[in-house]
Length: 145
Image 1: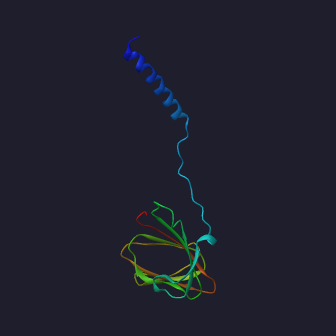
Image 2: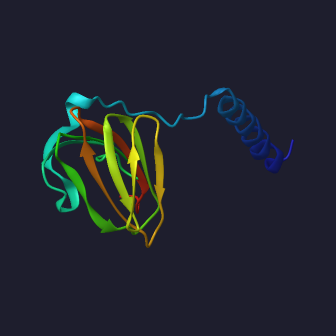
Image 3: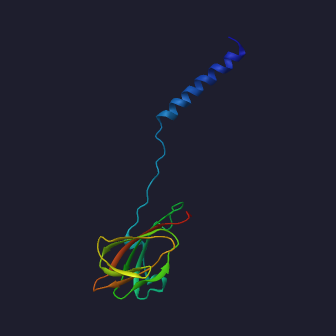
């Protein structure tokens, strides 16, 4: 056996052993984050100068490298989200209650099961109507932090 073979053979065996060990290991998983309403609820005035009182739920706001904004907002009677220009695609989804939404100066009623996509450059606002809270989900993308 030559010196070269004597050095190469143990390295080859060591390399094969490392490869087999790596093949048996389970790849790292992505993980998950769980948050609850009670942990993130924050009493706030109507956003964009909408007036009244709301409860905002900013889920996963402290999660690093997340570009999805996932929010719930309960608009108390008489409150609203002020009319404002949209900078990115934004989806509103009504969970419960009733409201009047205005998009580009056109108003329409919204209620449970209504989904509205507002596009960049459009303007919109939302006013709670009726006796019960208007509860909505709001989702859009932002620069990951």
